[in-house]
Amino acid sequence: MSTMTTIASDIKDISLAPQGKKQIEWADQDMPVLRSIRERFEKEQPFKGVKIVSCNHITKETANLCRTLQAGGAESILIASNPLSTQDDVAASLVKDYGLSVFGVKGEDNATYAKHVGIALDFHPNIIIDDGSDVVAELVQNRPEQTKELIGSTEETTTGIVRLEAMVKDGKLPFPAVAVNDAQTKHFFDNRYGTGQSTLDGVIRATNMLIAGKTVVVVGYGWCGKGAAMRARGLGGNVVVTEVNPIKALEASMDGFRVMTMNEAASEGDLFITVTGNRHVIDKHHFEKMKSGAMVCNSGHFDLELNLSALADMATSRNQIRPFMEEFTLTNGRTVLVLGEGRLINLAAAEGHPASVMDMSFANQALAVEFLVKNRGKLENKVYHVSKEIDEQIASLKLQSMGINIDVLTPEMVKYQNSWNVGT
Image (cartoon, rainbow, N blue to C red; front, side, top):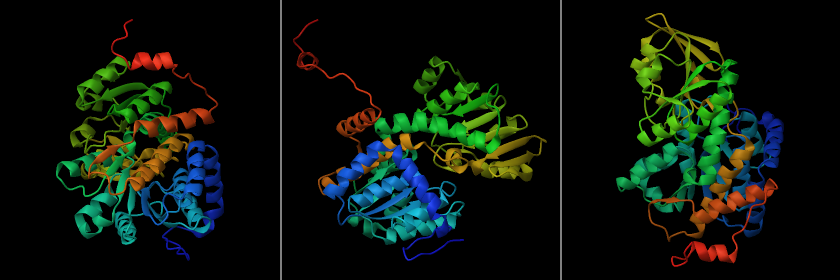
């Protein structure tokens, strides 16, 4: 399955590198913020002597993050964070053209993924860039002797941050971590605009279905849910939102969406999109209520948002209709269609977020890693937020790249904002 090269790697085919290089360079044109950071890192070399493991979706955008870390002097390894998100041509180019050790093949099984995590930890990293906290969890649980080598970690996803916070609560996080996902320039743009667009892109590529006139059930109204609901409505969908949080449910209602329980929505939906970061939000009793031909997909980090084991047990037969569409025929004669094996539909069936979105996400990653390295030995073992200064710096660079100017506070305005004794 894999092609081994002189660079330690596990990839599909090194001959795919020329096309991968074109993709990486094309994405770089739409990532001006990360490019400006890379130019600074080349001069300053902030990561000289630092070993970095990145567990990310192996895409053309991630490739440019890896290039940025390399430019800063880092020794690094990249492993796939999801079995269906690897772009094999990009992986090949990173090995051949950029000399990076890459371990990831589109469609790899769980055993291969676990092997790659082990290889990454055998590298003895000082920094872990994680996507779901799998690498950090493996390190903490099974390699505690290596934790002293860690400067810290950064986390790309809501799911991973939940796991990190749980470690803190249990007193099990042995190094500082930065919640990159919580930066406004990450979750606001990446989750709402990126996930919103790329989720519907993945659904359409997998199915070629017309969204207009369909009832689309969005399960969860966080930033990803807001984006998916907004884009589904923009395509003419009749959008229903389900939630467990009363504030988010109220917000969805005020945004003009129908809000109901999953039990109520189960019989109405034509297409279900889960974006909760939680387990079995669509469960056996929901599948039993679905109309024949209902489609379910997931845009949260792990496929466990859908109880696919229960669905498989309920099915009398399974039929692969299209590359990313599997039909389950239930005992009641109805069919349920699972898209992208229940994994991230935007990366399984499409290409993930546009480069212009990942520009800000990966700028946050690069600067978060720099923050950890600069503050080595000074931070507590807890989850840190990306600073307001970094967030605003990234937003300013993005605006500058777009040719957009904004106003600046006058000295009088600054004085007014910082005074308590100046009246109206």
